[in-house]
Amino acid sequence: MLEGLDLQKIENILVYNEHASLLVVSGVILIWTIYGAIWRLYLSPLSKFPGPKLAALTYWYEFYYDVMEPGGGLFLWELEKLHKRYDKLWRHVRSSDSTLAAGFTVDHDLHRLRRKAIDEFFTKQAIAKLESLMKDKTERLCERIKDVHHADGSYADGCINFTAAYLAVSMDVITTYALGFSYSLLDRPDFNNTDWKETIHSLMKSLNPISHLGGWTVKAVRALPKTISRNFLPDMYAMLAYKLWVQDVVRKVCSLEGIYSKSSDKSPCMMTALQDHPKLPPVERSLPRLSDEATILLVTGSETPAKVLAIIHYHILDKPSLYSRAREEIQTLMASSSTPNALPPLAKLEKLPYLAALLKEGLRLHSGIVGRTSRISPVEPLIFNDWYIPAGTPLSTSSYFLHYNPDIFPNP
Image (cartoon, rainbow, N blue to C red; front, side, top):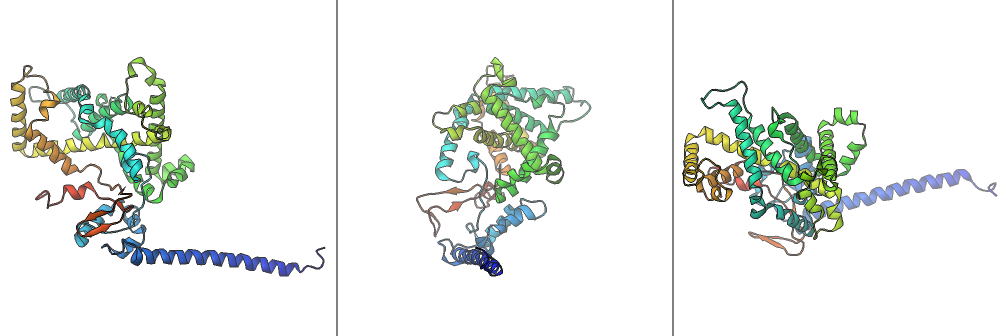
């Protein structure tokens, strides 16, 4: 039956059809790209907003500063320059965040659900219940200081890195609160300074490529042999190792395995409470979800307060007048107490105006996590000065720009 067929002619037709299909696909992609560029630059409701045309055209503008520039994470400072050029509001195409943690959730309703569940653990009443824990850790730090600085004014061999010491305090508090078990960094000779600081540094560096390229980068690095990822992608490797460690800890905490199976360790903590939260659907109580939340909690609950305390400590030592005034205010409170040698309760310390001002100024100077997280108003449009922002538009800002705004804080 095949004797009458021209096989060469059939082969030519197939090759032609293959080439034609490639041309059609390429043409569709080209037309769609051109249409997308025209839409973003001229037809979109956001096209009138100020800003560089390249930033409005593609998210690779942000990617370049955050990933390609030496050092990485430099888009924040490019933003600062652009804010000066285009005032307080300007437009660019933003890449999406890729984590299941509440603070990085863009979707409005999902963010509200997750944020509401987390907020329960950080109300004033909830934090007040941690007072005894925080006092214990503070007293332990004071003991470590006395080991170096003797009562007669002499010093023992060695010194204390207070940035590391404060990191140990905050880490011991947040691990107890979030996981129900302290890692007792305060009891370690160097406060485990090097390991945890390097972990945080690697996490911050690896977040930039992940947030721009998406979660597939994590899967790709995970698929590589460990020797390759460890040697050629050390920050990503450290981040993955940390996430796997947190996931294993959360799994053990929620199932009461290993060291967490002891009867004395069965007191509720954030992870077990979230796992049993009556208002969260099952997917929000899954191990990946809780692990991502714990990953962010351990970093923000340790590094941020530690850096704030270190900044305050530095400025108090650098400006003796700050130290004298704060000390006098605290001594006056302690002298009026029935137990003048004991630490005053948190409720009374909060009412000291100068101490509160010092703490707030330290928080302002550090600014916490300065990276921007997007939020979306899904239904209602927003008005900023004379600008109409359509519903569904992702918006973001940085605490750094607010905390160092000279219109709000003169000579910031």
